[in-house]
Length: 96
Length: 369
Image (cartoon, rainbow over all chains, first blue to last red; front, side, top):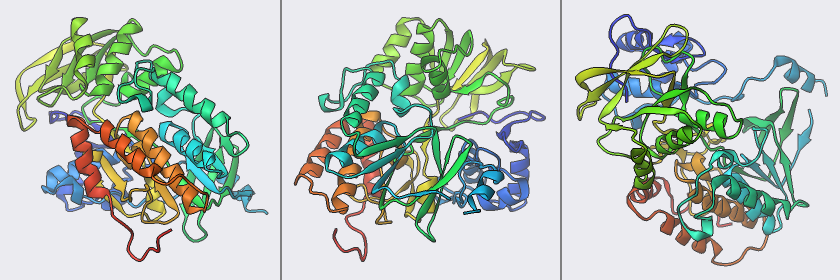
């Protein structure tokens, strides 16, 4: 549990896509208050780690700002691949 | 694309997965274990401390030795257990009930098992604070891996955030490795881990500051310090800020279950706070709502390795039984009584509450296998 940061201090929630807490709060205030929507507008959770580092923080922030219990905040849809795969490898596989 | 078709696929070669594989093999099933790391054993291989729990689950033995015991057991079934290390299962496609997997970064292939046991473990939770992206901010589990598996010291003086078992144990092991522990801060009103671990730390003179948290990390290119403050019951800042000099900040605020593949397989999921995240509903055989999928260990809810091993046994036994292999009558009940004894005590009571939420008596419309 961390303390609310002071102004002008950048807090990275999603390191892969460099999305800050400030940006997330701003978009939640505009009504984008689901993980799926925030993913689409900010790319949060869409980098190499696929949200493993940030989805939990994101869900807690949504819960905090909307007053919903975290159990009611839906996680993002999980699509394969769960880890980046080189496109060349997939293309090779398709030849057979 | 190459496709392999094992009877049972175990995803994850840690405490739960190895136990599941050994159990399924002992019933006669052919098992494939896929492990993303270079080495088998999961988190056990970095646990240099002795385990608690019960004798059946090797209480009094150091974690990495427990990994050796499991690996020896697996080795005795080497005709029926095959193992792929450095291989990640990257997805599950319900269209043709097939997984894709990647070995290293060189080869992609498909796996179509008859039954799957998802024992993918957990990932570390992180918390947001200013400068949390500076080098020197680590998950405590990551630091434990660096030190105890790779022999790399990550810093000279550490601030540990979180006084659960991981925070306490890693603090102690950092001290054993010669790192100075400036303090342990814990946002809650009490120490979450075992008293025996906390007492060892206190005897070494390290302060454990309850109702305290990190406010920010300090530094330009690397960590040079941290600001900590007191917290009230609502986790709001109270009292003065204090600056701590350190080049390492370890975050030990808990784990969350790794469940992507269960979600992709359409297993019914549920957020259970006592189990630390979204987990699959399961019956007493550790089967999920998808009849071909079982789950065990931290992927099914965060708990200790001893419980993960028993859950693995249950899942392995059940998957083998579902394939028609004869299994000993009443063995699952015996494993459940072991789980019950491991879940006695305060932390266990919380786990039991969580299990109660997520455990189903039977699956709707399912014929009994």
